[in-house]
Amino acid sequence: MTVGELGQRMSNAEFVEWSVFHGRKAQRQEMAHKRAQHGRGR
Image 1 (cartoon, rainbow, N blue to C red):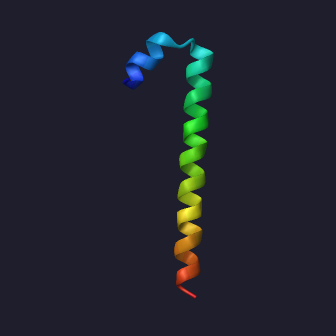
Image 2 (image 1 turned 120 degrees about the vertical axis):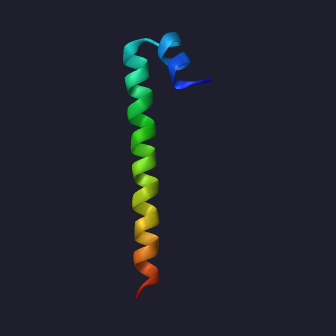
Image 3 (image 1 turned 180 degrees about the horizontal axis):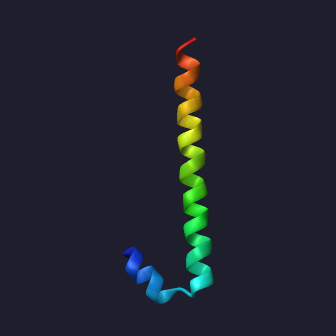
């Protein structure tokens, strides 16, 4: 299912919540990756 299809099938509020959830998830993964790289340099 594409993002466009999701936008058509979900209400606007659901789509926004879904987008925020996945954005935060990606941000947490990026921060964990940076912490892991920083820890290796010591």
